[in-house]
Amino acid sequence: MASQFHIPSVSETNWAGNLTYSAKKIVFPSNLDELRKEVLAAKQPKALGSKHSFNTIANTTDTLISTSKLDKLITIDRQKMWVWVEAGIKYGTLGLLLDQEGFALHNLASLPHISVAGACATATHGSGDRNGNLSSAVRGLEIMKADGTLERWEQGHPDFNGVVVNIGALGMVTKIALAIQPTFEVSQFVFENLSMNQLKDHFDEVYQEGYSVSMFTHWENKTINQLWIKKRSNAKNIHPVKEYFGATAATTHLHPIKINSPVNCTEQMGISGPWYERLPHFKMGFTPSNGAELQSEYFVPRKYAYQAIMAIEAIHSIFVPYLFVSEIRSIAADELWLSPAYQQDMIAIHFTWKPDTPHVLTVLPDIEAALESFEVKPHWGKLFTMSPQKLQSRYPKFKDFQVLAKRLDPLGHWRNEFLNRYI
Ligand SMILES: Cc1cc2nc3c(=O)[nH]c(=O)nc-3n(C[C@H](O)[C@H](O)[C@H](O)COP(=O)(O)OP(=O)(O)OC[C@H]3O[C@@H](n4cnc5c(N)ncnc54)[C@H](O)[C@@H]3O)c2cc1C
View 1 (spheres, rainbow, N blue to C red):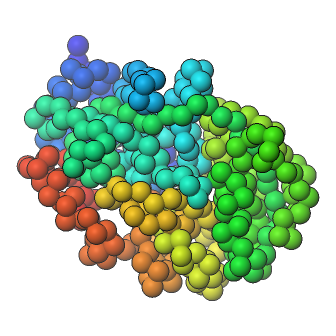
View 2 (spheres, rainbow, N blue to C red):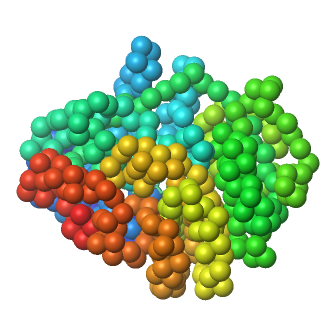
């Protein structure tokens, strides 16, 4: 049976609405045979996950192959503690299914509506000093190449660390194995108004206070407006305090942008709940985050955390008119070639922008210049202006990835304008 397709209209945009895909058609295969048929029929296919990227990484002028119907949990391997899933399953759906079986993933991003393969392709991350990004949980994956054949890798294969964060350049990921662990609960505490001065001497302490820690700032008065601390809940590590380095405990649930209603946000105030309902900031069942927005995010090695934050603080008047809020998270080092955290603990400075592309694009070079001396790397799926040469120079294994891409996709079927420019 042929999979469904439709001709994209002006409404066929990414999540943020800042990109209308240039594809001639979008197809929705629901099994491997349908997928193979579409892959073989397309000249320039491109995998499309949950459309949450802000740049053209998922665009093509030919055929978009959506994974929205390849969205099943395949099997839980209780021996290996792996779960095999189809590429398009969303973390929110998977979280619930795993929890019902008594299992958990190590971490989640700010919202649960993102597809597993799309998130892993771009090294999407949450926060936590000991938590690698979401792709660091990958233990195996299978890719359909342009000739319709399948190739499979598991951790330990010499190319495994190259194929996981693949930025869509290697073929169509059909299924992924993720490491799982026994399910756990998390309690979320929010503090308001932490002086940035405290970070100079206490950055590590603050980030080690929870399993996952995020700071939100509007960059005004050198203040972290909100500090979100997510603790794994067991009697020993819950010490609700009224004050933390001069920041005061919130007395009600908060949205990271305080004037917004917290109704979309996951439970705070120390109320313990399952990992998949606390690790993201936003709930599965609601419109996530701020809705109409753009995003950029920059990674710098953890050792430069305070200096990098101060470098951004120093130029904040340039970009604040276009900003909703910034978030600062930590990510543990991994071994994945195109992961921004390749062999280095990182912090990520994130910008949620107002939906004003022209102005946002004019301030990004200033932000990138301010972070230049800290070996900055941009998030693969968000807006950035860094040159391909500079970007490539930040990844020691970039050439190896190019060789791998050439082997798996010798005729460049999976290329698009983004990959031609950056790879
Ligand atoms: C509201 C919002 C919140 C976000 N929060 C976070 C966050 O907390 N942390 C963070 O790091 N990022 C975050 N992001 C960014 C987001 O996680 C990334 O852009 C991610 O790639 C989106 O996944 P997707 O499934 O939507 O991928 P898409 O945008 O659809 O595609 C991204 C890339 O993955 C490729 N791809 C998708 N599926 C496959 C497949 N099956 N095989 C091969 N390649 C594939 C595409 O071809 C493309 O290259 C957020 C984005 C939004 C809109």
